[in-house]
Amino acid sequence: MGQILETGWIDVSVISGRDGVGKPSAAAFDLILSRMGMPRSDVCFIDDQAFQVEAAEALGIRAFVFQGDVPQLREQLRAEGLVF
Image (cartoon, rainbow, N blue to C red; front, side, top):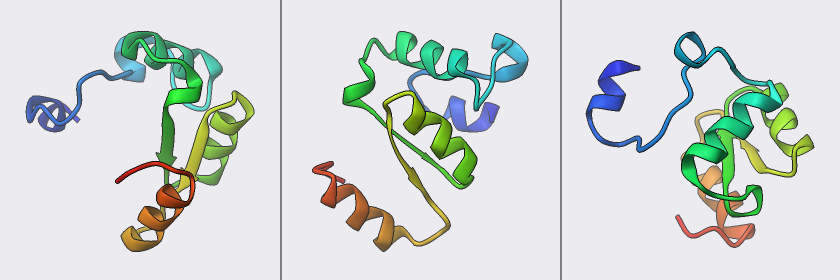
């Protein structure tokens, strides 16, 4: 994870070992939203685990399961009005 953060691809993060919260805890989602300065209605969450996606959706966050099919994910995002 450190290498990904160092590339500059990620602006903000929640790292369970550092921050003391992790998915699927509502506190983890709340913390990242706070750090991003964005409301739930303006973000989407993508994960490869359905239970993580369900946790985000239960909090009112648009969420998608990604299992390696990039064209399918793009189509899902487009269908939701998210430009990708």
